[in-house]
Length: 217
Image (cartoon, rainbow, N blue to C red; front, side, top):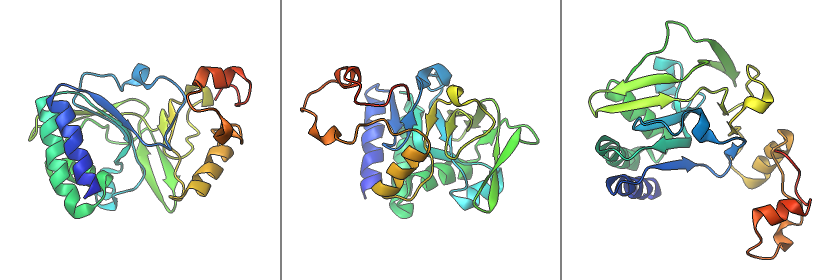
């Protein structure tokens, strides 16, 4: 019940007035995401996923990703997180629950009749929009923004300049070696190989100043 416990803790944070950003450890930030919609006043702001869960993707053409999202301190947001905690006890998957709960409650999205473009992942395509997609779930009084995939990428997105990407959360197998290999392939690995020899308490700024890490990204 790790997912359920985690979601109930997040709900309590919201109850006491704490907004928060959740980010997976393998979602690498390349810019200040608060400048690109994640600081908005809506209850929920999500990055975009690919095809999972398949049922919701089949209906909408897109899904939300739990690798990077923000929840702002609103009563409706805490209620949503508690509902998710109950739902995830069955799915054992936070992303499945987020998408299935919002879809089942009739969330309406202001997407155009056709997406701006589609990206291929495995043997299917998912829809993408250039601008933020706005959604509303009246059943829970929730407003939701979906950040464009081009800004927070789950797979390489050729529609945007490299320097304009906010975060990369590239798909890989769920083991450390595969993730490290993907980081290197995408130019996201900046640690010196002897990082484990650093003295505990060394600041990031001091580490960068030594020239040990790769400059820039």
